[in-house]
Amino acid sequence: MFNKIDIYIFKNTAVPLIATLGISALLLLLEKMLSLFDFVINQGGPIDIVWQMLGNLMPQYLTLVLPLAMFLGVLLTIRKFALSSELEAFLGCGISLHRLLVPSIIIAVLLLIINILVVGFVQPYSKYAYEELIFDVRSGALGAAIKSNEFTNLGDGLTLRIEESQNSGRELIDIFAQKEDADGHIFSVSAKKGNFFASPDQKYIILRLFDGTIIDFDASQNRPRILNFDMHDLPLEVPMFKQFRTRGNEASEMTISELWLKRNTGDSAIIATIHSRLARAISILIVPFLAVPLGLVAKRSGRALGISVGVFILLFYHKVLEFGLDFATEGIFSPWLTIWLPALIFILVTSRLYYVGAYQVGGVPLQNLEIIFDIITEKAKKLFGQKRMKN
Image 1 (cartoon, one colour):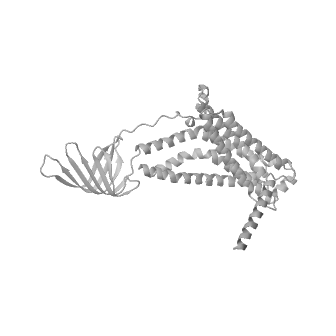
Image 2 (cartoon, rainbow, N blue to C red):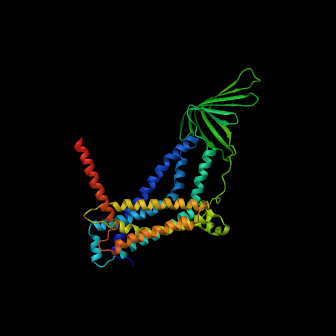
Image 3 (cartoon, rainbow, N blue to C red):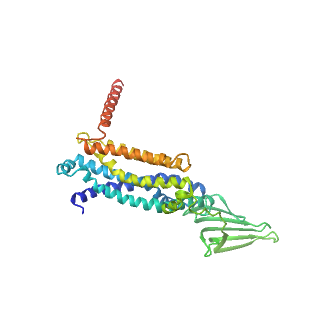
């Protein structure tokens, strides 16, 4: 059963963990959102499809965000205890650093389960859905956004021009449409407003026009027929678009169970993906042992150097695993070399930092780095101070 200290650590860890999880995911999505908006607009697709794309990218970002959130949650908790003398009180009462780490390990196990479910089963489907949306936008299967003051060819001899469009081109204002057949028959229509909707059988797109005029000109007749209307439906046949490939052609789109069933096929991409997912899952359990020693800070300095170093280590480790997966997928190197060797180095570095913090008297793992940082800072201050005096 958990005691009051465990619950206290849980509360202190959960707040920065959840905050980091939300902020990190938001920043990553905002960065991607700009490029997706640019892509969809240039391809003429509906703007609201961007939100579906971002939703499908979220599981992919969790592979980076979960370890980072776990790291900052544990580090900021230990740092708070160290600066407020609570850590000294815990140690003075006989509660070791190992015992204080237990709640963090439990959180890491929960995040590990979430990571397995998301990366192993949700992400393959979301990645496939994201790639399918990209394909549909490029092929035009989602419908082109109607641009204002431009003639848009809708196929089958139909040309459309509008003065203003709203709701990603679905609501049109001041419309002119003209359809010309091969025999010279011209059908023109103008309307004050209109919109698109699909027919019940999904075979046609209906352009519903309001308050307009139809001009029907046939070369065999002397004069065109003119008709005013309050509402008129102009059916447009839905074109046949290329179908997107089926899911499972790529190893990254397979669930962990599908990968395991195909592990003996000799496909290097499948083997590399299995190794990569296992390495990332195990790494989440190592993160608390990295966060605790980097959170130990001397009260006299109070520097946040451990945060910068830890975030750098995690981001560097994340990129190394990505490159390792690429090399192993191509069959250039074995996944034991490109994936598990970096994972082993990460575990060894973390073990060394934790040993210094847990077993050395007054152990601050980054003490030497802080001394170097102080020397560089002092020299920089003197250098800039001299320049100001000369000026």
